Image 1 (cartoon, rainbow, N blue to C red):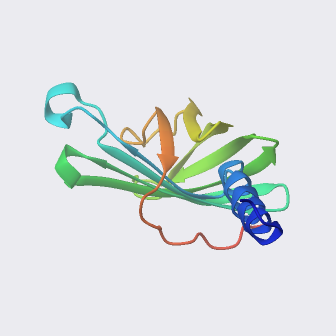
Image 2 (tube, rainbow, N blue to C red):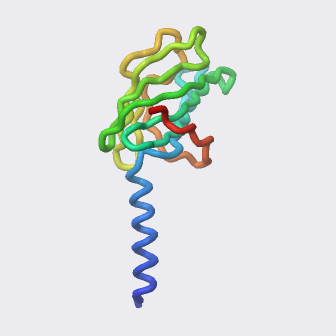
Image 3 (cartoon, rainbow, N blue to C red):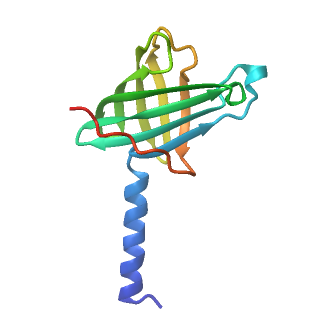
Length: 145
């Protein structure tokens, strides 16, 4: 029998779950299924995303070659609904370089697509479908205004 108290708890849990799933903010990960040495594909991509009003910002980390090559950087842009256009900075590239990417939330998945590659960032993943991360990453610093 469904009591008012049980219904209230159920609705609270359902609202929290739906609210969380419908937000781009949080930690996301892509784990590849192929061996980098054979196929040349990245092994992982991790995004930590923060939203401040209409501004989306965060950090990324991508691993290649069994973790022997790790690329880190930051990104920031404007969010509109379930999409964001960002400028990313390849912090680990020499010299540091910038590129552009889009993020798009589709159900429980997040698409990352580079639309303009940073010149010195050969190891920045070009496209991936990410899922909510199983472990919490470091929370990004507040977005710059």
